[in-house]
Amino acid sequence: MAARGHGPGDGNAMMTGAPTILLVEDDADTRRYMVTWLEAEGYTVRVAANGSEALVMLQTEVPCAMIVDLMMPVMDGAELRRHQQQLPDIARVPFILVSGTHERARAVARDLGIEDVVPKPCDTDRLLGIVASHCHRPH
Image (tube, rainbow, N blue to C red; front, side, top):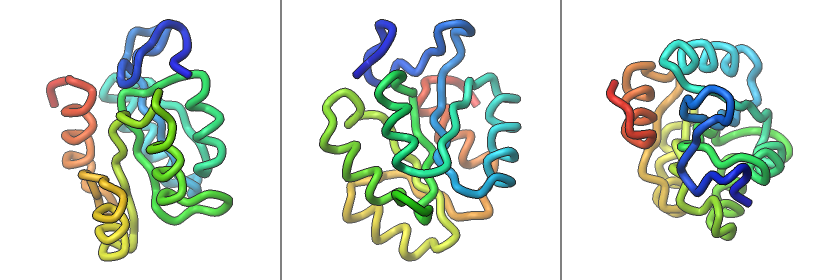
């Protein structure tokens, strides 16, 4: 599944050389906001509105990290994580769970082996620090 010679976690966009983040968020305003500050930090951002779209995107490009909303239509963040764990080419891509329902998100994270949980509204500096640590960049 790793396209264009990229291995899991490389997350490098072919054209720019910038680390690629897959942002999976159903709320358009939140997506725009997050894309703006991720791109300002030098990341290439791919966006999906739900877990199903994300799985399709992961067939052609393996990001250095995924930022995933827990509650979304079609396929939520928990179901996406379960699929991710079953796919060897993407199983090790860092999965950062964001949610407005923090207690539920912590329980899901514990059950699915997710280390990074960030409550909404997101603390931008905290989230950027987590992303930078996974993509091996200073923040």
